[in-house]
Amino acid sequence: MSHKSSNDLQDLQYFGEYGGVNPSISDSSTYTFISAKTMFDTFEGNTEGCYLYSRHSSPSNLYLGEALAALEGTESANVTASGMGAITAVILQICSAGDHIISSRTIYGGTYAFMKNFLVKFGIETSFLDITDLDAVENAIRPNTKLIYCESVSNPLLEVADISALSRIAKKNKLQLAVDNTFSPLTITPAKLGADIVIHSLTKFINGTSDCVAGVVCGTTEFCLGLKDVNNGAGMLLGSTLDSLRASSILKNMRTLHIRMKKHSKNAQFLAENFERDGLRIVYPGLSSHPGHLIMEDQMNPEYGYGGLITMDVGSLENANALMELMQERKLGYLAVSLGFYKTLFSAPGSSTSSEIPMEEQQEMGLGNGLIRFSIGLDDDIERTYELMKKCLLDLNILDIKSIKV
Image (cartoon, rainbow, N blue to C red; front, side, top):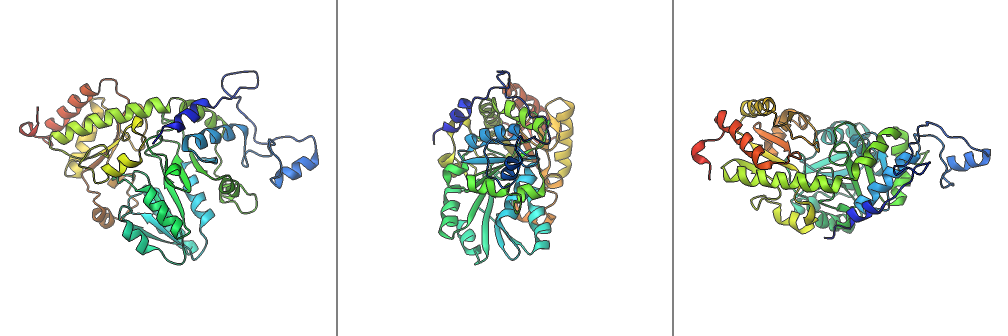
């Protein structure tokens, strides 16, 4: 696939009010009108370029939305105050009481909890399944199914969804396909593979500095306008509005996304290859041992690699905790959730970001207690990082010196 999205993003230019190279920040919650009729028309959604109230829209949020639409190759995009704000708005916009959702079983724990525990209050049922089993997806479709939901590369098991195949199933059955692309911006472009809606937690790679919480919904102009409808738009009425100052800072950080993703991926590939060679159980889409490696190759934008996330299974929660604490002590990264930071972040997802998933279901999907999720940082000397990490593994007897291949 081409990497046209990065060019589209690079070609965007905005001038500030006084000619600044960054657009001016709209630091207002409400906007004035010369004409009362224009205010009425704006409420009705019949005016262009007019702003009413920042929960509806603001110049800063629209600038960021345009950049994200360019990134994902969609007609439009709405930014939100969190990734969950984007996810919940999409689901509640599409689904009503009595409807049914098909979802990947390996998704972010917050998404899982919303679908399994919260949506049932409104009579919306979700079937969780192995999204890589296309027959299972087709067989799960019911007359009341409205949505297929997955992550491009899943959290935390790094399963790779065949987005083109899922799109064909969705279109054949007149369903919507929503894809959370948080783990793989630029690496995968779901809309070009047939996804109807693309979601991101902007908190992660897109912002890249772990200093904000934000989200986005990318889709058609019709869908995005529907989310903002003052009468029945889930995005509007749920009130998940991104602050203009944060929108402005994310837009600035996006300008280095293409550089950062290349480095995250290059570093992750190096560590994954070397630790697998050392005999550790590593999951990374860039390894030929990964079950979804060929699907990833078929749908990725090669210039940006296979992404910045790897998982390592060290056998037990005790080993995982000891390793993470030692790595943090030795300044190899932070024992912290989230991803996309310049420094490596690591956590045991079974007891953190996926803790909402019941233990028996974690075990069924292969989410063992000893699993560590690494968001690999932008280390300049990744060989040094590898040697320091390997020393931690050896010191804790997780890795045997005899098993290391030189």
